[in-house]
Length: 392
Ligand code: PLP
Image (tube, rainbow, N blue to C red; front, side):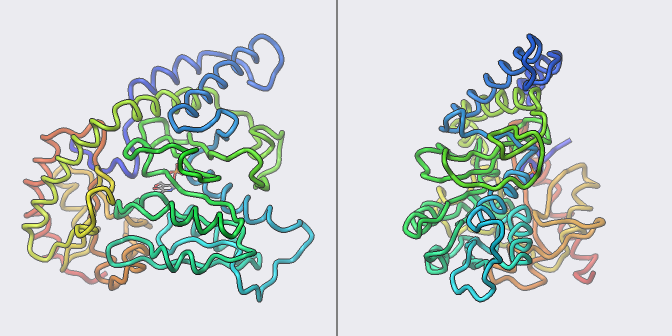
């Protein structure tokens, strides 16, 4: 069954499954000092080293988490809260925001930002252009002395548009702020080297690269100030308490190593397949591919996003599902109804456009036949969805 939703969750890689099964057979808490604990610790540290190598980081910079959401929460809440003494009340009237981020971030960043606003911290959200790129000048202008964190995603999960992260790093550096990027959608699809990026923090999610759901990491440079967001036994440099999931770490290491090793040839293969889908979309009246005007190196190679006039996303997805195809609107779905995309709205789109999106994301299991099946099914699916109307 053609599965074109790798950006939501990519199937488990056999290498990750094998690594998980092998590590899961080892008993022992990696914090225990007996032989079993030491064996678990050895597996954990081997996995950490492999993850670090795949991402251009040092092993000590890899903080294992339960996924991208926790990594984003830790980065955003942890860095901003650490910038003020516990007893001090943030200044509501501060003209310089403590957090500068963008309006198109994943909810894992945006909702954490809202929590900070509730605590009295100032937050600035840089707008995006119609192309899907965050306005780097507006982002830089919002940063000032007193800004604790600049957080900008590497590539947007709905549109696949690559963001001006190096401009964010520069702006943060000039203000003495910490620089974070949610790199969840970039890993395994774009070149990524933590040290070369000059970021202080980067978020990674396992299930976007073929590791199990519930695995991930926050890469954190040594010395970066983070306040823990949970209390407990002080594992993971005291920042992320809880017994570490050794089998999950081993599986994450295996999936990342494979994704990074084959990245270049896979990107070329998937870019060609994506091109076929985009040819079909370009020939569809009323369909507009997001970021089509951008250079090839400003978009993820495996993801295409379009606004298709005259329909609602859920009707189109329903019609595709009936044809045996799994795709996405890209935006959040609550009780089977797609919410208008906050990303499309932030790019200047209308409510109607924000509810009429299609995202197809390819990955390691995608075949030519999958793409042909989509192209074959699209015209009828669009026709059916249009016949169903645009009203909620
Ligand atoms: N950040 C981005 C850009 C994502 O696309 C996602 C998942 O869709 C997340 C964060 C959250 O990752 P996880 O599902 O591992 O919590």
